[in-house]
Image (cartoon, rainbow, N blue to C red; front, side, top):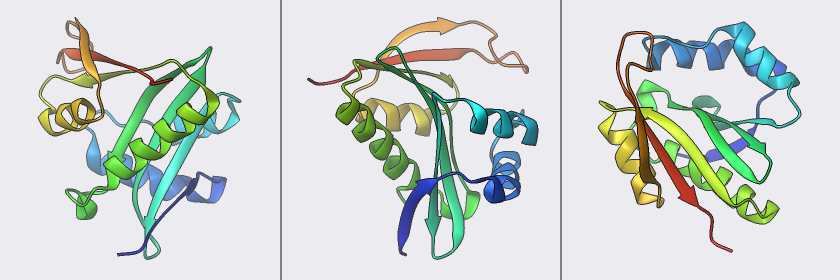
Length: 147
């Protein structure tokens, strides 16, 4: 497959929301994605594979830090390295901008995501009990960026 990463555009929103709904039990709404488009510190990168949306990554770059908000791979593209490509792209952007840390929270049951983040050097940094709407805990993770 031919993968390409580019920023989200307004015209992409419906496809992003479709993938979001397929991936998460408590998905973001169209309004939430639209709001992210208007924030000067928010970035949403899309990964396209031969004209199909394979995944996306929403993150903030604020005060020398990256906050991972949402990383998803469309069901038909899972286990093909899409999330890895998107995360690598974002971390490379952070490195170029001189950011110091990256933070995220992830469902404790999402072992594939936790494994991905650890492979990039994220370490456990705490636990938020009953963080998600369904009562699941969130694992907090942090990565110190290399100088």
